[in-house]
Amino acid sequence: MGGKTWSRQEERFFWRTIVPQSPKAVKPSDRVHDWKVCAEIMQQEMGVNARRKYSKLMLFEHYFQNVQTGHKSPCAREFVVEHKRALGEFRKRTSGGL
Image (cartoon, rainbow, N blue to C red; front, side):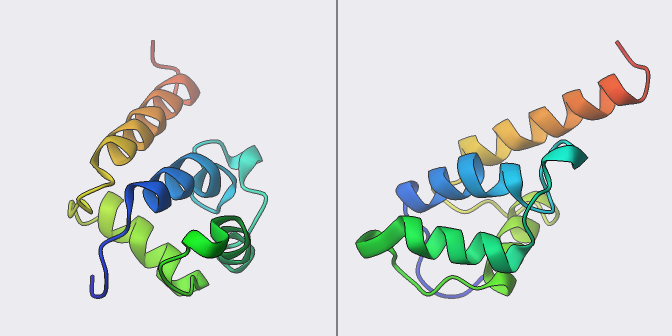
């Protein structure tokens, strides 16, 4: 990933507010916005604290890099762990596991 490292504030908002309503939300029923709308929400909500211009591709790549490749952004570690744990628990519940 190139560019400035995301701040803790950006990471917190992304993982706790954006991802839960994105195409990568844990529960399919919560997937209410596409990445384009998520980028618009993030840009608006970050306001003067936005350190970049958010785009649908940027948000998807940020998610993918942190969840799929194993690379963790410095300020995202705890949020990625939290998200992956929730994914695992949801998959267990829906697949008939304990």
